Amino acid sequence: EVGSSLALCTVTTAIGFFVFVPTDYRGVAELGLISGVGMALIFVHTLTLIPALLSSWLGLDSASKVSGRLRFDPNSLPQLARHHKTILRCAAALGIGALFMLPNVRFDQNVLNMRNPDTESWQAFNDLLEQSGMASPWFVNAVAPDLEQATALSAKLEELDSVEQTITLQNYIPVDQEEKREVLTDISYFLPEHRSPSEQAAHPPVEAQVEALRALFQFLGRAGATRGDSPLLVSMRLLRKELGVFLDKVERDQNPEVALASLEKILLSGFPSQMERLRVALAPQSVGLDDLPAPLVERLVAADGRARVQIYPRDSLADGPAFAKFVSDVRSLAPNAAGVAINLVEFAEATQSSFRQALISAIVCIGILLWILWRRVSDVLLVLSPLLLSSTLTCAAIALIDVPFNFANVIVIPLLLGIGVDSGIHLVERSKQLSPTDGSLLGTTTARAVFYSAITTAVSFGTLAFSSHRGMASLGIVLTIGMGFTILCNLVVLPALIEWRSIRSERQTTAAKPVVVGNL
Image (cartoon, rainbow, N blue to C red; front, side, top):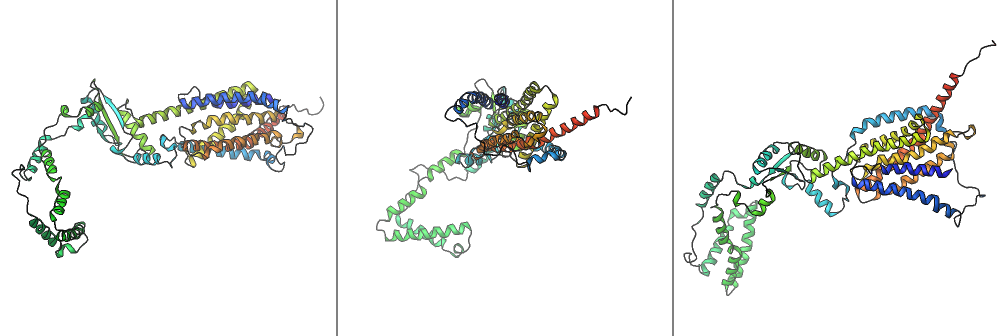
């Protein structure tokens, strides 16, 4: 009697995993294959190893009386059968309300949000992701047949509201070069005339250098430099203080040349080379494509002439809506664009498609299995209705607590269908075997067994919520919520549906009986 139930549980739970195998999400497909095969292995051990243990050193005394309670307290849960109409009305209201919450369910495309936020790598990358423009690590690349078309595409992309800047090889060529060179030429007139070492003035004597430093010290000590708190005045006072210390040292030193030479080296040793670099910078040559460094050209233009366009977002891509808009806008003009942002969006689309495919497959496969089992549409709908209600309530709950679906917890709903259908099958089967002396369905041993079976499953899933990996933690949270609603719907709503159908069937049977009046 138990073996057939175990086989049915194995098949239905395995369905919840195997429905992911045909999907495009390879990670979940492999998870479904491994877990589905695992269910079969557990079933084999349940029919072989456990009976062997029970018939040997783990044997149970069949004559001993079970001390624990096998049924719910008749004064509590079984009394719900009397209020089946109220329960069904409340379930319908909750279901309708949950349907209105479904548009608020979102999918988080940012894979970074699945990782442990306490790690330094996560914090560092998240700080980078908060940046926009050229500081954003998730820019997008597009490829045009040549540099001219890349420049044209770049101009169109910069007109988008979500794009701050685009870069092609052409951006490294300065614009208005002639005008800018004229400006630099005018600035170069203010530079002192370049002198060779032989033309430079003789080095001043030590006394002249010390006298010049004293003059500077006296200038800094004037009344204007001793009052006020502007940055310039603060710097002047600090300089005067340090200069005074230096002059005292020079006056006490028998060889002040060493101290003066050291000061000159610290302050002015790099000045001639800086001036030379400034002269070179103020006399630039015109820059063309041929003048650009080869490594830069190789990064932006391929050997066959195709040109790369780098596209940077205007807003932070840590914001989900801004992330989606940036990718959508770019792909509208450059369908073949690539990059981490594009990859994540396409990954999310493939994941959501896999979720829809798995959900439909789970409903169809479970429906076919129930039809093969009972060959009655009403029984199939009786089991599926609480499952669909619990799934809808789960989605509404995670929308309320703002826990989005992600690449890890997307398997929840199909999995809940495969796990939850077991309880529905057991309860419907037991309801068909009820005798008048058994009382309500919730007063049977089956109802209590279903309850504890679901609780142990919920606890095992709930341990995932303590994972430091936020993707795994969200999987545990959503599965625990889903199992809670599954228990509620199977032990409250389903018995109410069974009671309602039973009363309705009795009324139809009574109405169909012929009424005999008098003797003919």
